[in-house]
Image (cartoon, rainbow, N blue to C red; front, side, top):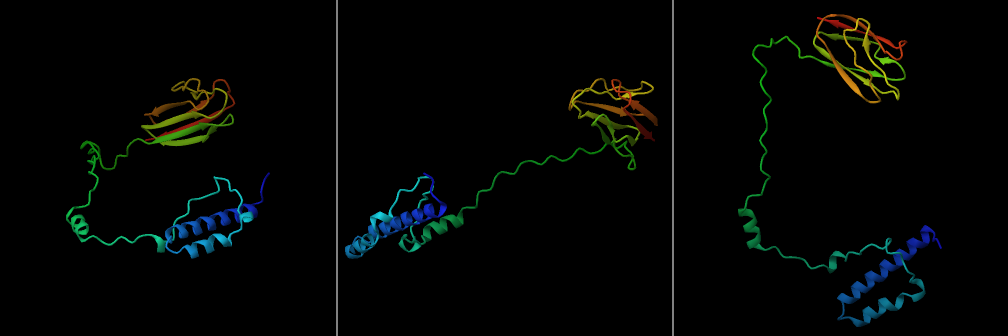
Length: 191
């Protein structure tokens, strides 16, 4: 039988009150009259079983917990000991760039051409000589990126497969998909 949330909440609160009263009565054993007064006020018909998953442990009120006095010896001992810190890990310095590389020379950049819905994206890509293009097939069917002049060919790429091609010479390279010749795009390489 499913209980409504409000009924479950009432049962939980009743159980918590009983536990709190019992805890107070156990600590105040020297006052039996007061202990009996707590248990007499709760009717047995109001107590109903509560599912274990709904019951939570009850913390005793702060007034019933013993207060620990500060121990001067312990404080002094802690003051003398430095706090433990994790050992520092060595930090690797980045490798210095070769002296031959000119300050204005940029490292080769990487670019991505995705094949999505039987199309190359972007359809036209402008890069610099020395840059690398990664062709990635996102379609369920196989595709290629094959240069019109046969200067590059990725070969058949399955779904989520990729192939990198580096373009070292300037020029305009038109390419297509061998199985789907209607798919066309261009890469423009500048110096």
